[in-house]
Image (cartoon, rainbow, N blue to C red; front, top):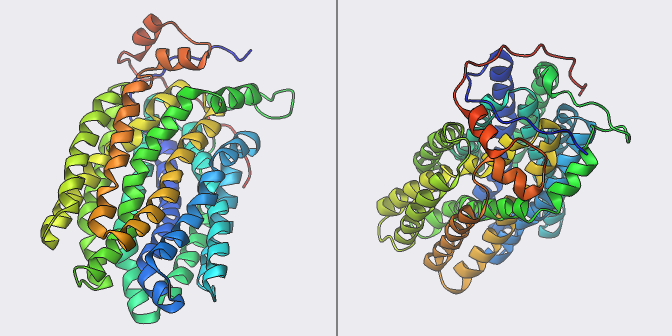
Length: 445
């Protein structure tokens, strides 16, 4: 049996090692997200070159997410088995190669194959990177640190159109993929050289199979748990909104509103900037509330549903952008709260599989939303396509009501050993942060 788990600590300030970790993994996630977003900006050009319908264009995006989703859980388990840093660095290098190969695709069929393999390479990254953050932070720092790292996704939504749209406009869609691949190699080198050592308290004892003690037991417990699958489905609802907007807003603005690709990229700065702030705030609120995601997700998704309905029926470009900004920013408050209770409640050697399962649910949103919305746009128009996103908000809100809200109830649902509810409340109360544990040697890249 695995050892009893300690209760999460109160929120703490980030120490130097945690800050360096945040900066490096922020950069890794930034390039990860930019790599995924470039194809959304390139879709009109790719569609023209290969004579693709919107349904086929949606399939080009979904091919990536199909592989990306399938590799979430294996990626987390690989990080638990071989080390978070090693898996993170390998993923960075391999997906940068497939980003470059995207720019060499000579047909739609080849593009689908390359994007699928690109999804495999990126799919092992999320679980490994979030585990790497957990290994280099205390429980009281964890959600704030992860919130800062994950805000890179919204920052990428600002950077990608500003950087890639001019490249696509002046040098063709292939140039954007080559450029981003080069930056990815640079980030790989930085993470390999400068990622701090793990905290000593988070170094797992070897188990009988050579991996961390309890890893096999915990992986089975996580993967077979209806509670964990509920958290995964909650993230599915959130990502239906995010990937639906990311995939089709550039094409909509270009085709329906007559806005050039470069101008559409500049317009995207507004909602993406608001989402950046919201993700960070959501992470801090999660630490302050010791989880309790219902108090954030329910009101956020209620407002997002109304804003999405108004966005889908907007008659002017200004109204469309305004309501989209409201929708994506309030929905983004939910990002880190979805992960909060599992990350606060599991020891770091178990977080890879848990994060992998939750992100699997989210990335299925990237499989579903682009293709379904493409089909709706072809058959019923963009208004119906954008209205479909309300399904995601309703799903996330419904599951926020049905999932454990704190460490005690989460551990009880998963049948994990741990402190009683009373001791959890006592230990979660604000205390003076303990001195950081001395670092140990990190695993090699």
